[in-house]
Image (cartoon, rainbow, N blue to C red; front, side, top):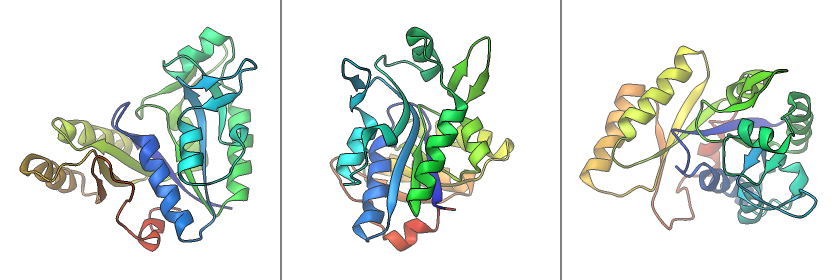
Length: 227
């Protein structure tokens, strides 16, 4: 069974997918058997049969050179760039937790290290209809996944990162680390990092600048945050 790490973000468009790809690549470059899984992806490109041909999972697969079949990367895919629960309603194809469980378990058995990417921020409904209500964090809880938070390093990140961590900790989730994305080595962003670490008591384990394709940390150090 794999050691896992769930990648969440302080909001949409903070770079969860890119950081997920960097993490998997770092592990695979050290000859570790690392893979990737996402329960639901919206705003992706599909073929005429509804199969995934482009989008976040495909990017991670190609960038990290996983070589996985597209259908094994993600359980539910939708073309509309909206929350998964709404995209599911548009397509009359609700997300089935049992299918997510099956696909997660398959990836969990295949890889030694598994990056599980969330959708949007931490408060993301996956299904919300007359038959079922469940959130992204229900998956995290079901599979007992440790959480790494991806945060944009710019103005406002102290508020959004601290609130995200505080919510997770108050609800008994194991959030263990933070990565700052789009980092600029300037006084405000360095202070943002220091304040986030001081308030949350969590380490910012990497600072990824625009255009960088490397976490600048070793696979051995990265492995410590998987469990």
